Image (cartoon, rainbow, N blue to C red; front, side, top):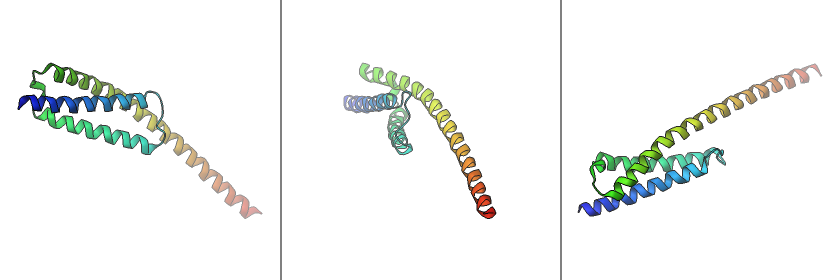
Length: 121
């Protein structure tokens, strides 16, 4: 029975690590094609992390299976790397928001100028 659990755990960890790899490849310095794409990828990653979290609550760390231990080590490394990437993405989102706020202010100014110009004519 433990062999089946190790096999299922290994498969889930491998899928999670593959998901991380895809995320890192897609977002390594490049902006998402759209906020929707970024959200979809982050939600998929979240689902994988939640699934592995359930296994971790089930004492996955105590397994002696070497392949599972290796995949778990890779998973931990990916979590650390993800933390850094998320911080970068957060800073990028803050910068985008500041840029959009600035553009909105310019549009409000242009709208006010148009209104005054029409009133004068």
